[in-house]
Each structure stands twice: as C-alpha cells, then as structure tokens.
Image (cartoon, helix red, strand yellow):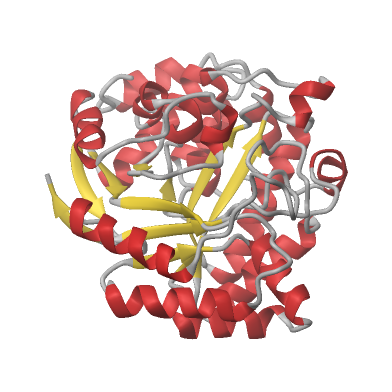
Length: 378
C-alpha cells in the first residue's frame, strides 16, 4: 500500500472505481448507510477500498499499530448449542469433555503473568449447563486477588445468556454480578452473522440476533465495554454481511460501548459445516482485507479500533490488514483451543513475534491493555 501523502494521487487512483462516489464521501467524513455498505462488499475493487481504509487509519493513528499481551483461557469445552461451525465443543458426558477447576484457572493466569507479563486474559468456553454463576464469580475474584493488574476480557453474549438460563435470572443481574466479581470487558463472540436465517442454519440452538444486541446493550449500560465481531464465510449473503455491520453501527450510535470490531473468516476444517458441504464462500485472504477496509470506512468516527484478525488468517494476512485499515494486531494468544481444534494452523504467538511482525512492515509498535489504553511503545 502506498504512503498516502498526495491527496491528488489518491483521488486519481480511486476516481475510476465503481464505488468512487462512496469512497469520496468516506474521505470527507460523511456517514454511510446500508446501501453503501452493500455496494462496497459487492465491489471487486479491493485496492481502492483498501487505499481509503488505510488513509482513514493513518488519520487516526499515524503509523502505529497496537497489540495486547494476552492468553486465551478456554475453561470448558462442554457445550449444548452444537454449533455447526465449531470443532471445539463436546457434549456433556463425552470422554473428551473437560471443565477447569478454579485452582487451575488461577494457576494458568498467574504463571502467564509471571512468565510472559500478560495484562489480559480472554476467558471463553462452551455453553456448559452444569456451571452456576458462582463458578465464574469465584474464578474472577481469585484472578483479581492474585493478579490485580490483569484485565478480564471474558464471556461471550451467548455464554452470559447460558448463565442467566441456568440461574433463572435476568441478563442485567448476571452482568452486574460478574462485573462486581472482576469482569472488565466482553469479547464479541456469539454474533457470527446477526441474521436469524443464517443462525438457523449454522447455530440453531444459540441466541438470536436481537438477543446478542440486547445483551451487549445491557453490558454497555452498566459500564462494561465490549468488542464486536463478525464471522463471515459460511452461508450468509453479501447483503446479510452488510446488515450485520449496520446493526452494530446502530447500537454503537446509541451506546458508544464497542471498543473494537473484529471480522474473521470461518475456519471450516473438522466442522459439521464442512462435512455437510454448506460452505458458500471458500476462505481467502482478499476477503479479509476487503472486510477490514470496509469496517474502517463504515465505522470511521464510530468504532475506534479495527483488529487485523491474525488468528484465523495467519500473520502475513494480518500484516497486510494493517495497510487496509486495521490499527490493532490482536494479542498473544498462548493456550487457545477453539480455532486450533480445526487443525488449521498453530495458534501460538509470542510478544516478540508480534513486535517483529509489525516492525517488518514499517509500523511503530505500542502495547495496550484490554481497554485499549497504551502501556508502552517498542
């Protein structure tokens, strides 16, 4: 991607694009809607879209990319939602099922803090009907007692819903209790594509689209910031992708609670979707780059951070994504088990490797915490 200093050069490059009018409006800071988002997704001009995404990112962050020193802690693989896109879950009673003890959870976080200097633990797992809210409260309190400097970025909206159903309690009460126990922020998992016809095909037992939106809204209302995600590349249409992006934009206009947006491509290996031949879009790096750029364009001035999504697309594509509008590399995901269950690639990535990867493409590097506050520069 070119260094974008010559505005006339940029205008000449995008003037021949089939979406030139949209890109001009984006560069002028104008708000874009659903129809513009659909046109961007359907356009084949990934280069011009990426050029504008890169320019908008430069306006906000210059030539600096961030990352978080993080571990993923998948506390249980027991799950009763049986999502067709997941190779990680095991039904209750399965010989390969597991649930970590509270001592083991604290041990893993403490060792990672001492050995790697982590500042965040991402806690996610299956929808385990045998776990009551006390399990999570005790885990969060114990982590904060041993490692008060480590942020807890944990539990998807669908996991929150599972806890509420087990407890026969309201979502707001569950969120409030978890926040009081030490939960700092929520990941965006469980959204997939916010369209119930898509969910009916790939995750029929999971929460509906409006329920994901409502849980996130309630979290924002009580002061819990969150991420938003989109898992694309299963059975959704281009229009449904655009509707997903705009639903998140609408909630952000209301709450300002989303810190970051993370698009990631479906990893089909060893999943039911693959075995049933339901994949509509084969995974590819160009799709990721275009989705990164479109996210930056649509969310410019609305959601601050776009993550490069190395976990499902690899380090090389994540490097390119920084030139298409992403400003955050994600995190050091030592211990991750969900994506690695597909056997697609190794998911171990250390701080040193991330810093090297960012510097290799000429970016400055800053480490952040779970609330996107800068800790230090490298």
